Image 1 (cartoon, rainbow, N blue to C red):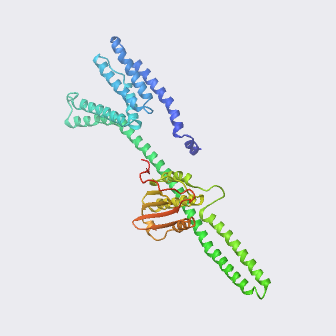
Image 2 (image 1 turned 180 degrees about the vertical axis):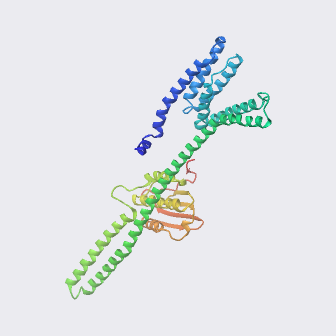
Image 3 (image 1 turned 45 degrees about the vertical axis):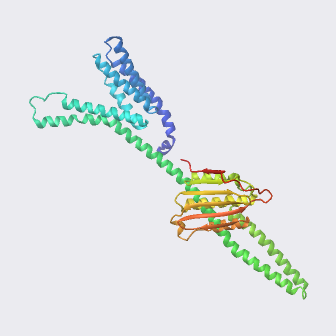
Length: 416
């Protein structure tokens, strides 16, 4: 029951409930100050009293949602109190209640300026109380020196209490900032874990597909070779046996083709439906940045002129390279794409971390090489202090054109 109540009492609901309460408190405080002020002194004093009451009431009502305006109300009320003293009128003690609420709101919820104003007001009040205690009256007659010192130290609690609203406000601000930081860290960590989970799943599928390929495809290849050899050897002596061996070889070829298709889908997570291509590249880069990777993009020329298979290969190579940078790098990577006249060159660079240099990587690099090779391109990897992936994929010969000028550079860095 209690947990359900905490879950229901979200910050949004809490704000909607508290604001009417704060408005009611401000209205009550303004009315109470008006009823407790001294009114003799003519129209000027009446104006001062109304101004003080309105300033403290509005400031109390807005101390959380508009702490900056509340601080101006506090200053106006302070000037009003000084003006009332000039007219010879005493102020209501309820003004202190409003001042405490407004100073607390400025420290807890205000801008830097509101916090500074709240601090200055607190220090000035505390200093004034201290001066009044130390120099406000003469030495009591008949008291010993020890009693006078003890009495002075006892009264010094009041300057400390004058600073307490600001201190409590700063404490509340610190707690709120820590909660916001924890929520942000949790969100980023969740996104990063999700990206790493997808990468681990892809690596595991690739490993299983490669093991199956090594076992099944190799065995079927041996069966095909042996069946073809036996068919040629028995063609003259036993046509029936030759036909049987031909059937065996053809069946094995069909099975090998089906196995390769299935393994391709398993290795590259290619479910039924449209596959990602150049149109999905920007979304991939944005997702990597959201996962915590500081990514810089440098692109020359215009995108395009790739077949669907090569678009998919380019997308998967970029995805695998950036995932490796996220997992093993220092959290930053650079992606360079140069669209030439005959091919597109891809370079992904990041500083290698400890996990990248231990020699126990997964099958991602081998999978990228295989993708590039199947697409008619090539891929190389440099490992060291700097980890670099280079790939080249040929453009569609039917639409390939002259190389783009080098001055058409698009550079996109990580968001500030």
